[in-house]
Image (tube, rainbow, N blue to C red; front, side, top):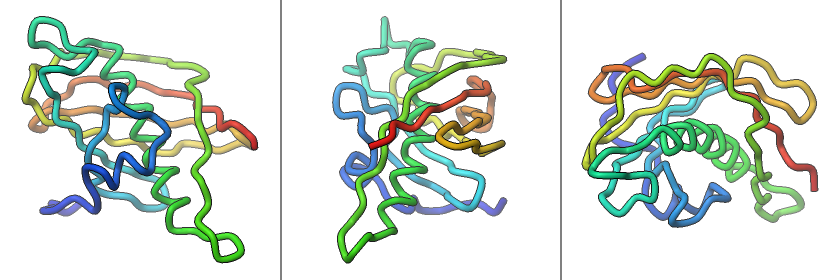
Length: 151
């Protein structure tokens, strides 16, 4: 993949596309999105609820991967309309996490990049692989099943 210079969207535009709201937001940029892959960014702030003693803890990393998947759905849905009106993105829930590896715990101020790749979609269940990096070095990776809530 080529080097990406500027995010597609960031800040409040990202916030509008995910169901999570502060203080639980763990993505703040959308760097890339195509048919199977989404890359988000997240700058860790000192007041983050998952930070302890200047370090971003495991639950925050897991939530960052899940929210990257949510951002993907929100972004795709934001480009659609139904009868001339915007469609609200569905809410997703983590159904299972497999093969979780945490390689390091990033410090406050670090900017994470998280790549989510869709492996399979069956009905309302999406199987993804997620990989989080910091300056190209691995932070975490896993497989996740995400269930989308039906309206």
